[in-house]
Length: 340
Image (tube, rainbow, N blue to C red):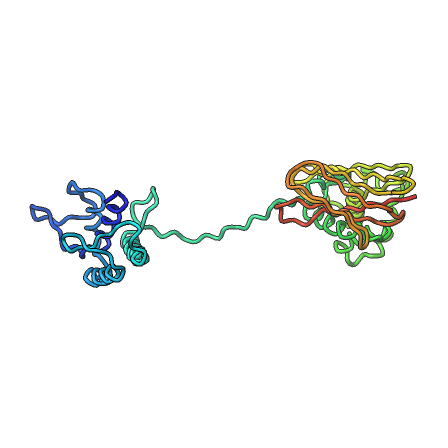
């Protein structure tokens, strides 16, 4: 009989063994689980618990399974268990093995290396870690006289991303982006939005007028700072191209690296087009759309990617969606605006 068959024989013998009786040392002392008498391994383990199975019943059921398979007897009248000849007995074998191991684990639970006995550990509330926002690293590079708190910048960015390709006038975008922070001051918001959009020499916002911290600014200063931040964000999310300025490049710092975008306005006699070339810091996709038309491209790893739409209409707002693979975040939305 080969070694595999012998191993099976040993396992069957263990599974079908009779419940151990009280064992004692030759000198009358009872064996304890923590003491050894020279024999190690399974023999010692068997003395630490009583067999939960009724061995006579198990033996009878097991013998019936053997007989039902027509397995021949050996010279002593026992069944010859040859590997590959007992398919019907296999399920019974694994059932017995599972029960024995389950009982053994229940009686003697496994311990960690640092434990000497079974310990109860309290359940601690693990604080959920919010992953770093993918797109907001760029907000730290905004050109502002006073640094805005992170939560306000994030709120402004989310709102600007929803409005950037909406087709609204720039002043209306600023007011819509900031109005949630100042819901009772819409008239003042419109006034200051108009001033923020004016050229710098005429704008009443020299850097010396603002404090170092947003929290110490007056409500009016906070309103103007928020409008300035919204204008910076929308400006970073917008790429304007024209026949005189047919290329524009934008770099956007993300949590996984630098995203580079280049928009080219191609004017030819037969096929005018808008082409967006990008360098992705990780695998991702581009979706370039206007109305019902769209162009898509994707790649599984970092590198270059481009999309192109034909016959662009000046004055239309084209939406560019950048998404990174395997990152559960909203896509970055930019607006591409061709003009005459």
